[in-house]
Image (cartoon, rainbow, N blue to C red; front, side):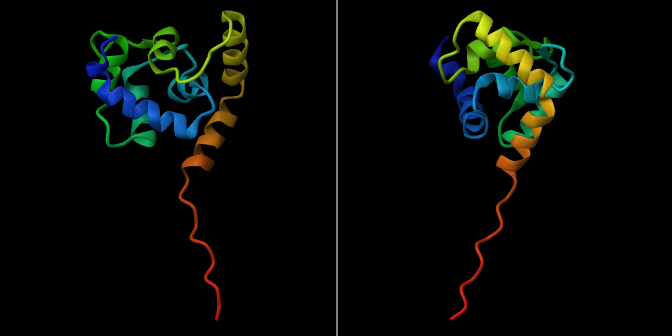
Length: 125
């Protein structure tokens, strides 16, 4: 992959890394239907939550290398966005299946991580 063709992807990867423990959590976040691939509509909707300033079409094209109307497979997503060691294929599959079954926990974690934090209480003199 050419580094110059990853500008938007690198920004999304940084945003995902700040929120998720691993790339499979991020994939579960994007794959709202649980179909093991990310549709254009899912990608755009979830990108607006995690990185609203980025161009979803451009990132999707950078990731898949094709038209952004083709779903992104888990393999493509993981290969393109991984920021950590992934372990064996069996370990990845087991982790993915666990995360997929517990999607609500991934979403709750996202909401807690991305929610604005209240300002600290003011000290009274």
